Image: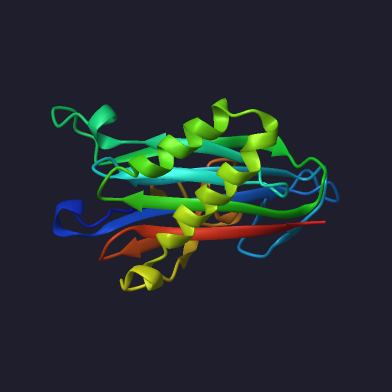
Length: 210
C-alpha cells in the first residue's frame, strides 16, 4: 500500500518539512543508517541529506563545520522559484549527496530553517562570508551562528517543534509499506518530519565527528 504525505497549507500559518540525514559508515559501507542529533561519526564516513518541503515557503539548509566554516547547502526562496501556474505542492531535493567527512574532528552543525519570510540578513552574511579573506571569516561565522540561534522558536516565544520519526521511511514524499527491502533505508529516504504552527520551522542537528 502507498500512502501520500502532505503538509498543511502554509497560508494558514503552518509550515513543515521532512528530511533524511543518512550515513554510510566505513565499518559497514554497504548499509545506509539513519543519523540524528548527537550521532557519532568518524573521518571518512559518508553522509547524505534529503529534503521534502512546501514550495510556498523559504527553506535554508546551513552547515557550520568544526572550525567554524560556513556553507549554505540549500537555499529556496519562493519569490525566485514559486510559480502558481505549476501544480507542484512540494519540492523534493538532495542538498548534500554522499560526501565523506574530512578532518579535523569536532561538532558538525546543520541548521534546517523553513520560514514564511525570506531570511535576507542571513543570506547576506553568508555571501559576505564567501567573499571575505580567510582571516576575516571567523568573525562573520560567529555572527551567522548568532543569527540562526536567535531564530529558535523558544527564544522568539513561539511553540517549539518536536521532530517526529516516521514509522516507515519515505521516498520522494511517498511512504512505502510492505515487506522485505521496502522497509530499508535507500539513497532517497526521508526519516523525520517537522511540523510547526507558528513562526519559523527550525531544526538543528549536531553530529559528533570523532
